[in-house]
Image 1 (cartoon, rainbow over the protein chains, first blue to last red):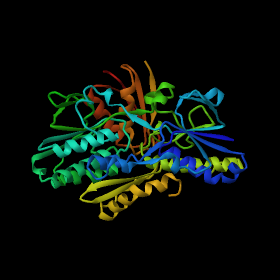
Image 2 (cartoon, rainbow over the protein chains, first blue to last red):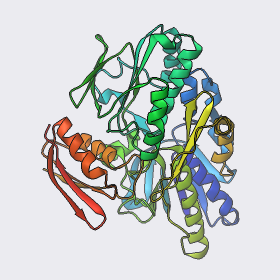
Image 3 (tube, each protein chain N blue to C red):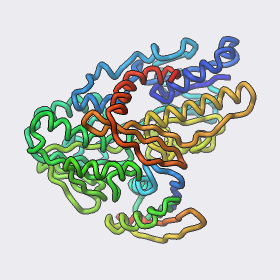
Length: 377
Length: 75
């Protein structure tokens, strides 16, 4: 049984490691092999980018060598896939090699596409890449006053990031002693301050307490970087002195180039995690079109379910359970406090009040993440 | 003209209206999108956004626990 994992991010790495432990005996007996193909020899902890943008982490803290995170019985190659040949159960890589599989797991993630919004690249800062997060920190340190406007384009990974960034902006300018010279303006695509009802209920009064102005039903259409105006599809506009953007996302480039799904999102069964039309192909993490948060957390829980099921099918012929939509997201709330959102397809409990304890748990998790991707936590 | 069904039943994040807006961006003018949702708020949220942004409401119907909300991309 040849298991091929395409993508070395959170989902792919947890899946490969978890599965390799469950199938250690079968791998030793050469009955099963697990191979991972990735575009990079580095693994990045993406949630850390928010902290880089506010000067709380440095970029070097976000990376580990991918090979160092993998179980020794996972065969790892830095050789990105260029073509999926599903009818032959095969992929072709950049080096020209072909890898055949019995089971394929696609965990190729997502990418930002700011160029899809006219003027957005020239007329905004963001924190969704290392380079942009470092630049955003510099801009924040140089800012002397005026309107800081946030816009949110969808879809995007890490749904709570816009809310977190607003709280951190408040704290940042307060620490710099210029909060009274800064107007914070939050613009969001739907008629609430957040897409998830429990987060919206919690965040709205918190925003009000610290003087964050809100405009809802603001879907970014284009940006005039010269006159510093952001325009919405709904016909409104916001003038800014500093524009922080949550850029639109698409699936990975190979999902687009292989025409795997609209927007690059691969049609996936939300419970079984199979790619539509393919019984031996699974998709996890941001790469899917499942209507669940594009988060490391979702990728983590999907990978655990899939590893359990694949191992059970190999050992007994029967899967164990389906993915229930479970997601767990920390939410930084400013003033060294945090809360969290834990939900699934059916349950959406209210958020706990923000506390220092949860913030320090998140700080600890920023380091414990490396245990998670090893499939241990 | 394409017709697409978006199954956002039993989803909280990003939620039905966000799913609709995402697919609306990918659609061509004249395409019809049918949003399925088990969230009662969707039945008022979607028409409010559609009217504000300038697309067309086609129909709203509840079948069992599921709202079927059809919209057309107008611009």
